[in-house]
Length: 232
Image (cartoon, rainbow, N blue to C red; front, side, top):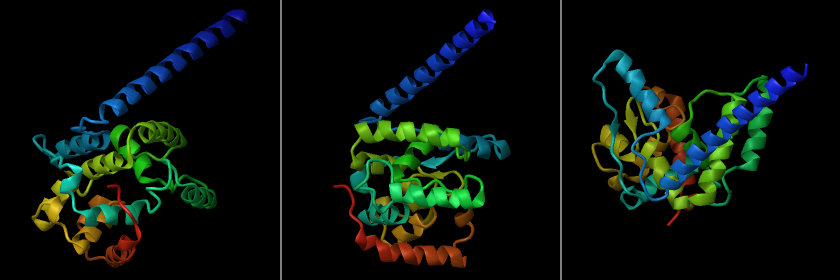
C-alpha cells in the first residue's frame, strides 16, 4: 500500500512539474510579445491545417499593421461589439461572467463564456476553440499574464492583428483588403461596424452578410461605437 501511495505522489509531482513548465513557457511568450509581434497563433495554425486538408498549398491571408495604422473606427467597433468595459476591467468582466454562468446553468452545459477581449486574445494565441472548463481555466491564467504585463493599447493591437475574419483571413489588414479592397487605416465607420459584426462567427458571416441577423448586429454596433473609448 505504501508503494502505491508513493507511486501516486511521484506521478502527482511529475504532473505538477509539467504543468508549471507549461505555464513558464506560456509566460515567456507573453513577455516576448510585449514588444515583438507574434507571426502566428494557435487559431491561425489550426486554420491553416484546416485549409491544407483541402488544398495542400493553401496559405493564410495575414499582414501585421501597427496600431496607429488601424482605423479608430475599427477600434471603437470592436470594443463596442466585444467588450464595452475593456478599458475599465483587469481582464475579466464580472457582470458578463455572471450572465454567462446563468446561461450555462440554464442550458446545462458550457454555451457561453462572457469573454473579454483579453480572454479572447489569450485563447486565440495559445488555445483552441473547444468549450471546456479546463480550457477556460487555462485561458484565465493566460489572461492574468497578459493583463499584468501588457497595456490596453498593446492588447488591442495584437487582438486586431490576429483574430479571424473569414476562412483563412486573419487580422484587420487582411480583412480590410478582403472585404473593402482598402487598408485597415482607411476604414469608415460603417465598414468598421460591418467587420466587427463578423467576429463571433467569421466563417459563417463571410457568406451570410445579407442575413437579418448580421444586418441587425451591424446596426447595433454602429449605434454603440461613439459610447466607447479606445486606448491612446
